[in-house]
Length: 223
Ligand SMILES: C[S@@+](CC[C@H](N)C(=O)[O-])C[C@H]1O[C@@H](n2cnc3c(N)ncnc32)[C@H](O)[C@@H]1O
Image (cartoon, rainbow, N blue to C red; front, top):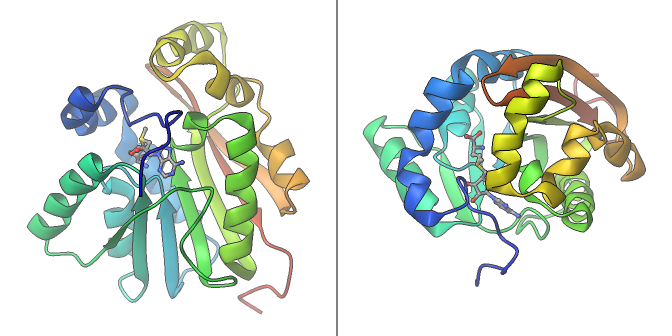
């Protein structure tokens, strides 16, 4: 599978990927908001969980620790970062599955996952690919399944807006604009999701991270 030209790696330049975990830990306090993110999964006993744009698999590993009975699959388009993820998974003796692929053409059957998560990936996508991705996530979720997103959102204050220019310089203005305008919930509704809500906003040294939740229509998986 070839990487499309519009593809944006974790820190834009492949040479910077090895510093990714350090940046996330030091600048973004990732453990704090990723823990909140997982705590707010509605389904506490999911069987199949997909983490799209899993990067170095920090969130995938946390998901597997929280839901030990679940099969957790991390998907990413970048083989380089998946190699880092594979090493981490092996060192922690976990059994997160890794798949190379793209969020807008998911290599999974319809109605397969109880929950899909995405952390800091949606802002890498063009407007068109955001919609393609949301439609794909909708397709692979079971009826009533949940989609949990953590991504750059509307800045909580002027300081976080100014700080976010650094992220925009790195990841690009076109792909991040919808995030800053707080448009992700609107797009999720347009692509069929229901009960879409922003659960919380975390201010970080590089901008505000919003936690969103949305559901596929259908019988509630917990009923
Ligand atoms: C900023 S990193 C986030 C990694 C991880 N989810 C986290 O929270 O630390 C974004 C990741 O999304 C991946 N990515 C970007 N576009 C993608 C796409 N269309 N499909 C799959 N992965 C993608 C990148 O390779 C990168 O690993």
